[in-house]
Amino acid sequence: MTDSIKHTIKKISLKLLVLTGVLVGLDLLYYYTLYPQDIERNCSLMEISQRAKAGVDMVYLGESSNFSCAKSDTDRRSISTIIGESLPAHQVGDLSKAACHASIYYDILRNIPRQNDVKTAIVTVNMRSFTAEWIYSDLETALRKEQIMMKKAPALYKRLLLAFKAYPVWTEEERSAIIRKGFKKQTFSLPHPFPYRNANEWDHGVGGSYTLYNGMQPSADSLALACHHIKHFACELDNKNPRIKDLDNIVRLCKKRGWQPVFNILAENVDQIDSLCGPDLLYLLERNVQYVTDRYEAMGVIVVNNLHAVRDNDFFDRDFPTEHYSQTGRKAIADNVVKKIATLR
Image (cartoon, rainbow, N blue to C red):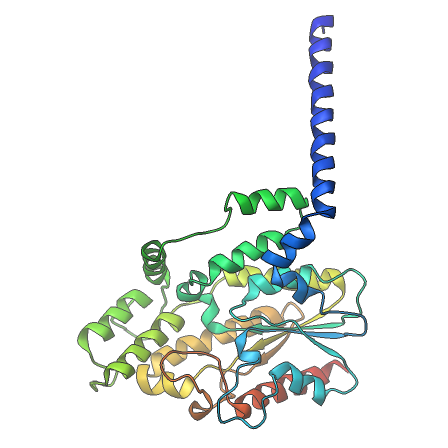
């Protein structure tokens, strides 16, 4: 190597060293000045992680199903509160936020402070969250923006990602097109001949014919509900589904940090699904629940199958499928979780 080349390498190395020092200095300056304000302004999820304070040995991660109440409820306790009161030997931390799903739960768990007393992580598994309508929902942009600030990365780098909008920002037309494409990819098979191969075909078949599975012609509201159920549950889960990958990440994280994962599969309105869409859609939903149960029990997860735990009259949203239960429904969910957790003792 000639002296000229050595000199050039030395100059480049020195410049890189200076640049690295400047970037580290700017990152530290930002971290100790503006970063706390940006976290407070742009990342409510970080505050949720901090609720796993000293003494909390059990955390409950959920979305609006945890705290939504019917107007007629006299008992307005959340699912996590009922669990906590039913397990007086434990202190339960509520790490819930509306519209959350497994990807968000993973980030919340990952940012729980290293010094903690957590032994058990109860994670809500919402079966609607596996399909295109939720994966690409209009709430995702705000959540993905928050997830940037939850990354394990230099503070200044995260701020730059925010500045350059390194998260999905879809127009309504773009989002609708992505969802329609997702419905076409929601393929499934049944153990008998069936006229549709994916959620898109089934949705159009029912909506276009204005006829339910049993030949009945429903009201416009009932037809809309039937089509919503089809789009949310007509699929066949496998390990390529992004939410399955998120749940896998949660299991790995829990093992790494010494926490016992508990997956709480929420109740869906199986009475309504059966009456509006028939046994074929209910079969697909039950098969997907069994897939989740078998996959994660084999990984050491305690799985609570609440799919059939709540009856139709305890779902108080009547124009769209949700997991919003009256007090009877919330208590049924909590009681089943408590029974399963009792096996940990």
